[in-house]
Image 1: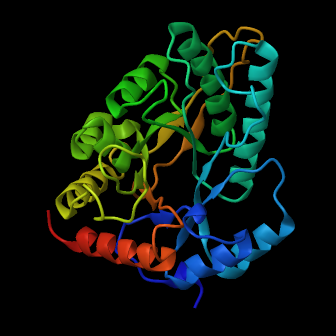
Image 2: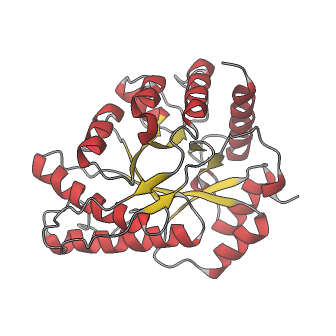
Length: 303
């Protein structure tokens, strides 16, 4: 039976990063479908092989989200001091967004750079504003993930940065495992984000290292997961249709963005979330199956 026909609790948009399974793209897609998933998250590519799209079509899986800005050439980052290097990073990441849009993804995400200086964060802000414009034109929501050790290590700091940028197509990707490392309450982070929450990653660790263990192997508890699921469900559909606009920010060296008409973008039925697990932490298929079953059970459990 195609994965798209597998039953799921109402409004639970549960996916899994394809990198949670070892092996090539086609084999991993079919293994994920066999586990009963309806959605899959992929890594954005500048050029997508035809066999990838054929595998997705045959599996019945829907692409929920894409990781973008990965594996860029050395020195090409979204916060690079060199304008040429930064421009190249933006152009390559645009190709990743275009790939996500062609696959039908409604969200994509990137991670912050390492430069914590005010100048470095300003360069990252400029790059993200341009990419958020580009993504909006393709009906894809751009999220930024908080990552320990980066310029935006905490969820609350990342939310403060998103609010300061003020772009209508910029959201938070909340990683529950990262909250365990920074000592933040994932439930409080969901509430703090409100409509700025764009996506959720679910994984576990020892509270010190970003291990991406299976759920409940480390510090993560059923209570934390249930609280996050309930809070995300309560956020779903609150705002109705949104409007994505270019903020018209001046751009140093990239050219001034031209005004665009508003783009109507209906809210998703619920906040999307994905399991992001290490493929070498035991039996990867069992880890995904057990995580899926746990989340579906908790989703059905009354608050």
